[in-house]
Every structure is written in structure tokens, then in C-alpha cells.
Amino acid sequence: MRDLLIMQERLDSLFGHASPGWMPSVDLYETDASYVIAAELPGMAREDFAIELERNTLTLKGKRPESTVSPQRYQQLECGQGPFSRSFKFADDIDTSAINAEFTDGVLTITVPKIAKPAARRIDVT
Image (tube, rainbow, N blue to C red):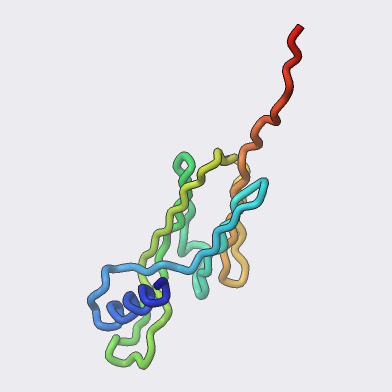
């Protein structure tokens, strides 16, 4: 189903019927200690995107420069162009002061540490 939606977005973009923007591919996984987001942003520079945090929601937004080729000249159009925004809401409380972001070879990796929950303990009754 996801592939069909992506194909529809690409066709709409090619023929000028799409709303502005696109969605970069993102992997999100959880470990015991953190959430990790890996976003594919090929051809973009660090100044082309921003990461914002509000409560337990992290938002990645930016803009990929649009091509100078007119749509009538494309034989195939698969790379997104223009503005984008992706938001991720975390179920667990996160340590906002320890979030780390690295951008290497067109892949942005954001590590969002969880706040450690206190361990259960037994209370002795005297």
C-alpha cells in the first residue's frame, strides 16, 4: 500500500497536481535506552533542514531545492523536491538535553535517549 501511495505522490508531482512537499524515507526503531531515527536526505546539506523538539514530539523539517528542469522534460521523477516535514511522538519520556544528531553520507541519524525509569523496589514493613 505504501508503494502505491508513493507512486501516486510522484505522478501527482509530475503532472503538477500535488500539494507542495514530499516525505523523505525514515526508519525509526527503539532500543531499551533510546529511540533512533534514520532519515534519508541525499543531496542535502546541513543547512537545508532543522530539527525541532516540543515536549515528546520531534519534528524534522527542511527543503530540498527544486530542479531547474521543466516537468515536460522528465522521463522519470522519483526524487522528492521542495519542503518537507516529519514529526515523531514518543510514548516514553525522553531526555531532551541528551539528543544527538549526526549527518553522514546523506543519512541523518538522530538518537533520542529515554529517561531511565526508577527500578521497582521492595519496601520492608517493620
